[in-house]
Image (cartoon, rainbow, N blue to C red; front, side):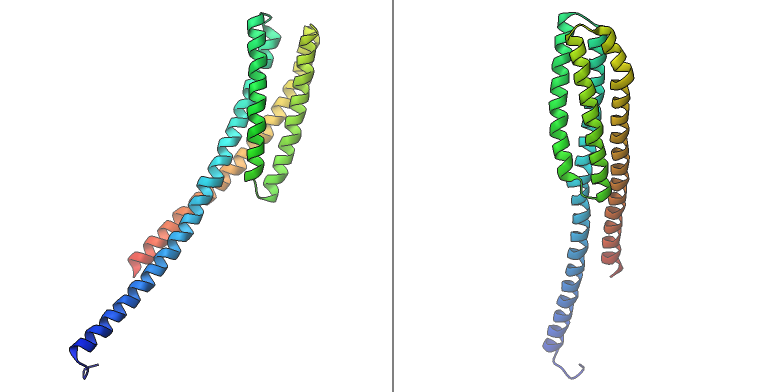
Length: 193
């Protein structure tokens, strides 16, 4: 190298520097894509599932409140409002259940989802029976059904929602740790060079 002209040495040095920049850029790009895929998983899958499950929980709670309103109050206004809210909530939850099915991927998640569907079906069936008794003016029988069937089905339905939500929260925490790790690794790789 000592015998080469200064322009040749500068050319080789420049080419070596460009090769190092290219390697560094490739490592940064690879690290960035890893980080991006983990963040995409969090924002496109984990967070939407948690939001959907929270909406389903709210829907179950709202229906339970409205069933109790139907049992307690007999005014036309409250009866009409409660029925409208039950129908609205059922429609919203049905749409959320469809979305949930699109997002769940793991075998355990799918198993929990099937259990959720069964529990929801039992809750809806008891709710329909309750509404039928109220419609026929059988308030005492409706209250008995509320206590012996509707409320237990509601609690079981909500237990499965919580189980899914807990599992999803754990998945989101793991994904978040992966994203942090990917960011740390990218930083260490870039600074370490």
